[in-house]
Image (cartoon, rainbow, N blue to C red; front, side, top):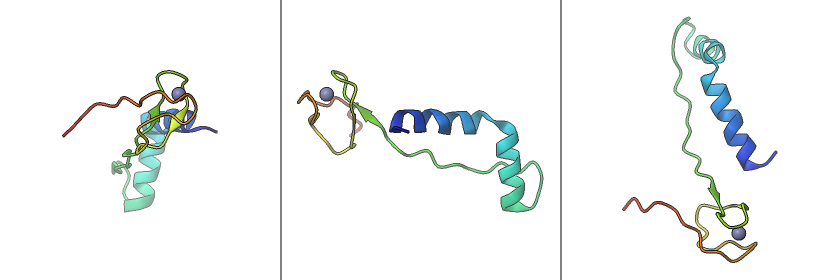
Length: 73
Ligand SMILES: [Zn+2]
């Protein structure tokens, strides 16, 4: 399983309300409690070759293309 399909799986899990409800009940002991699921993992993908890279990488080690990401600061 690569990082991309893992991200997709996480999205699916969070869309699944019954999973969320079950987890909330498990965590809090109450039905209907909505748990907060962390989704801070950032996946950076080379736009040139599609290789999945570490967020700290500036250049793709597969094809050498510069990694572009939105500048937030
Ligand atoms: Zn690349």
